Image (cartoon, rainbow over the protein chains, first blue to last red):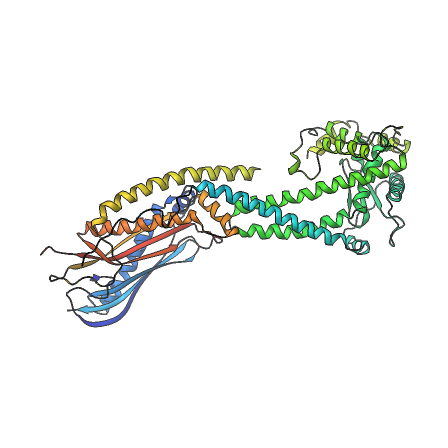
Length: 104
Length: 298
Length: 150
């Protein structure tokens, strides 16, 4: 599966557009990490635990998006976009979406 | 076509100014702002509150019913003294009562006396016990009557309501718990200034009335000297943290005021009336000294 | 009084650690930016035409960064008066540049020679606790071109 956030793929022709595919993952923060994070809120700096957590969740969102694309018979997703939103205190949604296409 | 990422100079999206500079300017600015706003609001509120007719204040005070005094004899004596002082201050009778002020006496060992809404004065046994002479008692009473004459209780109420609102508005402003609390405290400290000014006014008016009745003001400052001798009395908070001026400053102020107004400082100091001395002896506890002292600390 | 002491201690800690962290972070950012300048990040949507079309892969870089107590205090005072919150500006600047660097590092590790259609996204992840910015996530992504030397 080819993922790109370009609208074209250099040197390849799109034969079929299969519409929007999306993947999302809602994650709550871990209590232990929360305690570390609240300490970090005094000193400042990178919250490594959260960086990893969000990275994992985003990968999950991408995987789900890919699963959708596979189900509709696509072999590439173009114009991939990400968005993050905190839907409640301590929980965040990671969302990925793009256009599923068939490349020649 | 060529694609490159040339170096972009620093300091375009950020500032190179030292963060502490902004910190100090902001802290000073916000504290000054709060002090000014609270002061102006307090001034406006008490000016308006002062215009409320006394009759309306009596209506308000109905909600704060005070218990009947526990010793009618002492109460009667204090009321008589209060009436004399009130007349000397030029207070006239109200429609509700025979006297412009109503004294309530409680047999508690709290060392305090205060004036409250509706011309009520609360006097505690603890205070009576500490007073060395009738002259000192007269000044305390006269001071509280002056509060009523100058409409201080209703002014404090108006101020309290408005400043309370302002402080709670400030506390939501920054959106951070501890900061809000500190800012709120800064607002309340500003409010104390009004209290200190009123105490001084009441000292002035009260003192003039005492001089009028007794012909001199000798023995009146004994009261504050007595306060200083109480445990912890001479280690007071700094004045800006306190609701009353410091005792030494009050003594100094009274001396200065008596010189400026040609009040006689020499004269006979009257002892406490027999009635009160007898009452105090009959009700004193076996270990009178340490017990009330502990009470003040708490 | 106790409040005041707690506040001052927190401020001093935040200032000391925060300022040290910021300085070292900027030093590292500037050093790595210099190293990765050979992989340009371009915000344009359309890559150039090549005779041998390059392979493309999606590359990402993310960071969650937290603001220190001192900066938050200054910002909370700013909230009352209004104006430029300089203490947060440097924080977001650091986070964005770090996210782009991580994206570029991923592109380098995969053998990419430039990154196209770079998008940067910022999200506050501890919203809900009054109106403060607690921690901020910055996420950068783009398409890396794996150009074969022809």
